[in-house]
Length: 176
Length: 454
Image 1 (tube, each protein chain N blue to C red):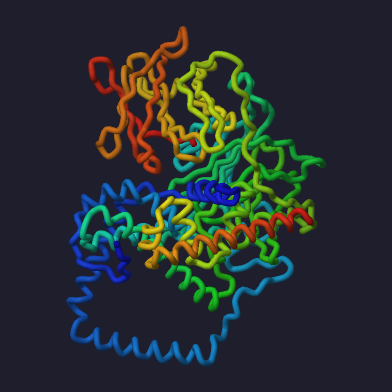
Image 2: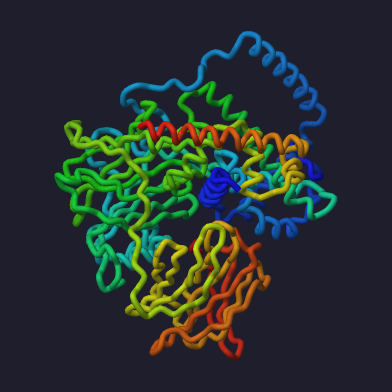
């Protein structure tokens, strides 16, 4: 199981050329994963994930995508914590979750994304990894650093909350 | 699968596509890594005996301070404090002082291109909107404004978005079946920091008593903010977006020769947790500060759909129904020298390509990647080529992905057509795929990067 290392590892241990192929295949996916998790600067997080990958010596190349996903999830979570502290100090700072959002998302999509953003971070992570990347529970667990059973619980409760939030929104619109 | 799951999957797919990668990301990554490596080596060379114990001491102090804060609570914050009334916030400050000083037409706004001139460096003609300007020639001056209030930074550099406006008209000769031949306001939202651009032309009812102000478009341009643009009657001198929580964001207004009124742009944060767009109001005032009109901006649903041409189509390929998307056929049309592809999966949109812009030797002109529906069931590249192109080879990072033989296009035309399936693994990296045209003898005739249409 790949494990996210927040403190880096062996410098110069990864082959830059080998990483380049992975970068070309996976970079955009990592940017988008960070964005869907609510990162305020998804590219910065994706670049940091690859930078850390280049400092690591992974036991096998196949572990790299899982490692990248885990780093992106961890960095985004840490970034949220940092932003919460920033907002406590500066009330007028940019709102949480503003990232590469599009103004022209369809209304329905916007409601779903807004409801998703309202979920606790862990549930949001589990749902994005499950329904956007279509990862099996084992790989979601690796990315989040939790057990497969916990993933199942996060997905189940997250979907229930999401359904409730969307229903509530629909009811409000119907009343309006 | 239930409907919530379907909605979620679709929303995630669409939302994910709003996040893009900087075209120079690999170089930035390698330089970032080298900078980091240099900094780490310097740190260990000079810090070892002194700084590590010092850092440990600071860490202890930090832990104590954190404990004290936890006991006594954090003061000076208190979270976000919604404001009432119209009041500019620090994040809403326009980038240009001249744009914020008074409710008058901003002097920072300048006409940049005359209708007959070729756009200069940095203008829409040199960026992604160049083809748009070519297809929708300007009937007015092309004016540009710096969109105020963009706060995002990319790689440490402040992002700047320029909005270009010009009036155009859908020529009946361009696509005979075009449903909207009237005037339209064209706009290019160009992110000057990363080259992203959202360019479109929108139906533009002439500003007047019935249309005091109109939203004609919008986008994010990779800023993480909502940017709305449009036009208004000539007496409008300022626009302000007022959100449901009371925050107000001042926009910019300008005009130019040939424009029927004024054009405007305004930007404000879009938070995933707070659907600002639905709660926002755009307040338009005249030079004396008197309110002219108020709009509740709903994001435009999309440009008007063009009808499928009645005849002349060449069927390229058909695809089966998949995950809620009906089956369909992709057809290519040649209308007065311009090539377009049409598919019901694109909502009837015709992508217009000028055959005359293809390389002289007979290469390719911006082939597309076609991806029907939401199920990632098929990835198809397609395009057209000139008469001497026998086959097209698609490669990514030097690795061959697919080979397509060209087929005859329209009777009486020298153009040929091609399409080929790509491996689904190429999804997401198609912008890095190159298409090389070869003649029958194997000589390279031209090469382009794949465009993308999904």
